[in-house]
Each structure stands twice: as structure tokens, then as C-alpha cells.
Image (cartoon, rainbow, N blue to C red):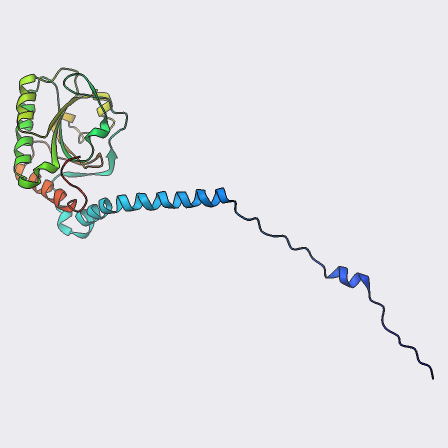
Length: 232
């Protein structure tokens, strides 16, 4: 008996019903990879450079309880020195603000004629630096003349004779965008402490207690000893 072999016809629709298209994800270009890598490296470099500074401030103001008993007023947030601050030396030559960085600064502000109060602050400024002993080379004295009157020559000579002294003229309006007195006070009433990065970070009370101010300076120099060296 002859038989016949039968099979179900393959449906062309079945194959089409289960077909799909796979789209590949876009591959990042070489330029994108380089840009991302460059940004990451820059961020790491900045973190490495800033880490010692951040650590010293954390140690001084957070970890150590006595750090909170500072005599001078902590400026929060700190105020970076303006890059466009107009400065001139006693010869009338322009001075870059960046040239002041790299050292702790004890700053006083006064007119060029330097009255009795100015003389007293300059004397105290000198004495404070000398009492720091071997650490004194990490602190510079700065007198900012803000009234357009040339600094009195005799006073400048006496100030510079003791070493590490800088006398610069700066317009009062420009200076007030960086330094500021306490409420009800004048710029001339205070010392201002500036860190080696150029940040104004402390304001000293008027007519300061020399012993208490020295303790502040000692603490700052001790807390920054791991990353700050004498000289610029």
C-alpha cells in the first residue's frame, strides 16, 4: 500500500513574528575618554594639594577643643585675596597680589602719615613676630596704606630694619572688598591674619592683648607645620 508522507507547511509568518532588531549602544569616543580622564586627574591633583591645608584647619578648629577658644575672630567663610587687588610699593611700582602668598601675614591698615595708634600697632606687630622665635620666619609683617598718602619714610625704614616687612599702598575702596572691620569699627582698628594661600581668616580685636594674640599665632603655626615652610 502506498502511503504518502505529509508535513505541516512552514509558516513564513511565524519567523517574522519572533524576529527583532538589536541596536548596539553608542561607543564613547576617544576624545570623551581623554576629557573625563583629564578632569579626574585635575581633581585628584587639587585634592592632594589641598589635603594638608584642610587637615590642619580641621585639626585646629574641629578636632582640638582648645582650637575653639581662639582669641581672634574666625572669618567664615574665609575671604581669598582678590587677584585684581591694586597694590604699589613705596617706590610706586605695581606689585602682584600673588607675591604675598606663601607666608602667614599679620596685616595692619593705616594712613601714610601713621599716627600714634599706627605707630603702636607697628611696634606690637614687630614684637609679636620676634616672640615667635625660630618660627618667626614663617610670618611677615604687612602695612597697607589706604589713604593715598605716601608712607612716612622714617617709619618704613624702622619697620623694615626688623626684617620681613612689606609696605604697600592700596585704594581704600578696593581693600574694603577684601578686609572688613567689626561692626562699628574702622579698618584701622584691627590686625588681620592671612594664611599662606592668601585667605583672610582671622580678625584681631582692637587694642589686642599681646599674650592672647601670640597664642593664636602659635596655634596657627603649629597646626600648619606639616605643609607650610618659611619663605615663599
